[in-house]
Length: 384
Image (cartoon, rainbow, N blue to C red; front, side):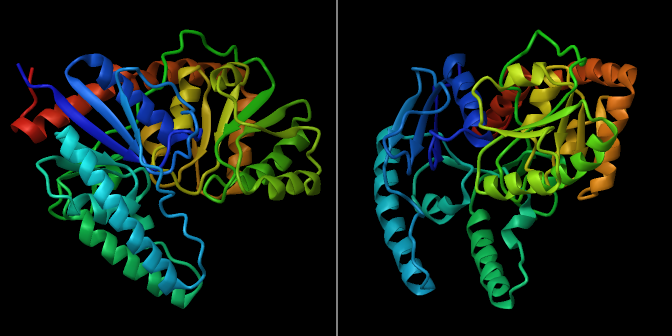
């Protein structure tokens, strides 16, 4: 029988609501309860706050309280020096944890930890989880100077990434272009199995996510301005929090859609909101996966999404259980929403198929892939 496998997950914090914390809770809880795994979660920036999601009592939480990468200094040299000092402290503390635990796997989804984790010499297999497209390592701006800095930063990151034993991406398209590095695609799992389905009769459209540039709710609000001219009795509810709240609130007034478009704070029981909605919309300009899509689909809600890189096309089967439209195309997004509003029978048929098709992302199916992957790295092949 295989020995008890010890896993350390290293993340910034677990007190914030979001996809990273939710998926970590799913994986860690499943492994801890499965019986053959001992799971540790190490945080650097917990600030003494309680976890937002529930973790199994079998999981050991270790908070280092480093306020890692929170250095506010406009001088790049002083900031770099501050980060260097933080890295030294972090390396010392995490090395002590690793020495005490003697883990089989050291896993992080946070690329700021890259250099420190591979510099700790131990026998653990080091795995980098990428929850964002690889292109973001080399993201560019309109500034020549910032582009040079970003390119240098990307080259440094790439240097450390190559030292990892394996990379796990969320989509198949993200497994391409890594050279000789071992890469496997393992999508996120459904947080819960929902028995109930939305009636799809309520005249409500829902969107969920951080209020930031990536989620591009400004594009959704512009699309909604087109939709509501034809369907004045429908409402759009966005659930999320973030830096763009004021800007989006102002846009709602400027678009004159304040009677039909609403921004709501995040709620713990988001499934109750999916179940009272008839269409889910994702307006992101890029995604690592698109967790909210599978959540909505598990409630029998069909989705309309930009076909952005990299997640939606791996989840939605176009014109079967939802609609994919050209990325950043406001009119196409509006037309997709209108199509499902105006065609109730198609909407309900897509909703039924969405609930069926999303079962491939069940926790049992996804965690079996993870456990086989662990066995492969440890023993050369999955154990039965």
